[in-house]
Structure formats: structure tokens, C-alpha cells
Image (tube, rainbow, N blue to C red; front, side, top):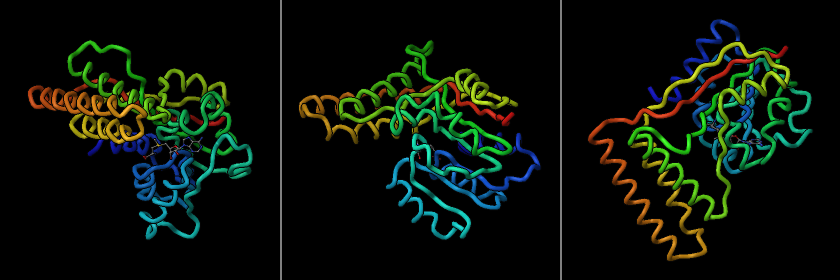
Length: 252
Ligand SMILES: C[S@@+](CC[C@H](N)C(=O)[O-])C[C@H]1O[C@@H](n2cnc3c(N)ncnc32)[C@H](O)[C@@H]1O
């Protein structure tokens, strides 16, 4: 079971036997849609800010999309987007962290923006931001990988994600007219999928660097860090560091 499955499993257990009804995935991707496809929904709408992601997902999930379901590209910063549509359950799965790339400075507005679309429950999944320094060698490697990934994204002229802590989200849920019913952190165990995946993101940014010598030297730095991190894993096993969190909120 992946960490993502465990987070969705927790949401399902919190939801219990209540019907899923009309479901909105407010920041969709393959993982969340895969989970939703296994639920007894009457209809679902999956939203992404990226038209190419929407097109790719429509192809990948073509056989499982019923006539009443849809994958739509749009932006929550557009006040007319999905206007008047109400869903029993709304999921914001790593949406708030990704907003920085699609609607920067909209983070304080996203929960009030979603509020009129929620009839029964809003579930939020997020990642607690990494601290600038870690207390363990393994944690320090995770922070170093995340910093290097973000440095490469910035040098490529692209936008990094910006994560928000669980307390920030709960506070803003209450301001937005929700009652927080449950919230819980889940510690993360990082393995080679994270190390290779995040450093692959960093590598993919190198062709966008203006200074080709800097890109080459960054490439070597990425290789060295990957080797160090994998060696650490080989010796000590997976790295326990930081936490994801889930929140269940109801409209008041
Ligand atoms: C990191 S992904 C979330 C993970 C995803 N649920 C999965 O299973 O992989 C973030 C999603 O939120 C969408 N998103 C971010 N900001 C948005 C905005 N302002 N309007 C609409 N969608 C947005 C992104 O386009 C993407 O589909």
C-alpha cells in the first residue's frame, strides 16, 4: 500500500457508510481519480488547472468515465468556473500546495471559493512544509533534495509549489465557514521512489537553464546527492521525516 492509499483509506474510514453522491475532485491527478473510481459515486467532476493534464487523463481513464462524469480544465481564480454546481463531497488533494503555480496569492481565497460547492463534506490532504533544517542525517538529506529540486525549478524560470501547515488550513477552513471535524497527521517514510522522482524533476529543469555550464555542474551535483541518498537508504532503510495530513470539514 502506498502512502497515498493510506491517506485515502483514512478519508474513507472517516466517511463511513455515508453516501459519496456527487463528488468533486478540486485538484485532480491520476492518484486521486483512481481512488474516486473505486467509490460508489453518483457522478464525479475532476478539475485541473492544466489543460494538457486534463487531455492526458481523459485518454488514460477513457474507459472508466461514465456519461455523468467529467474531467475539466479551469482555474478556481475564475469566479464563473463551475458556478452554481454543488457536490456532496469535495476533495482538495494537495491542491493548496499546487496553487502557487496556477493562481499565486490565491491560497487565502481557495477555501471560501470552494465553500458554495460543498454540501456535505470537504476533505483536505496536504503536506506539512519542511523545516529549513532537520535533526537527523536522513531528514537532512530529504531537505537537501527538496531544496535542490526547488533551486532547479527556479533557475529554469518555473514556479515551485508552496505547502501550508495543517494548522494554517484548519484556521482558514473556519474563517471560510467550515467546521473542522477531524484532522490528523501521518508521518512520512521516504524511499528511493521519492529520491529518484524528485531528483528527476530537478534534472528535467536543466535544459531550461540560461547558463549551460551551471546546468552541467548542477547535473553533477544532482548525481552526487542521489548517490549519497541511495547509499544512506541502503545502510539505514527508509527515512522517517515530516508528515502528510488529512482534514475533514463540514459546511456550517
Ligand atoms: C499536485 S496536483 C494534486 C495531486 C492529485 N490529486 C493527484 O492525485 O496526483 C494539483 C492539482 O491541482 C490543480 N490546480 C492547482 N491550482 C489550481 C487552480 N488555481 N485551479 C484549478 N486547478 C488547480 C493542478 O492543475 C493539479 O491538477
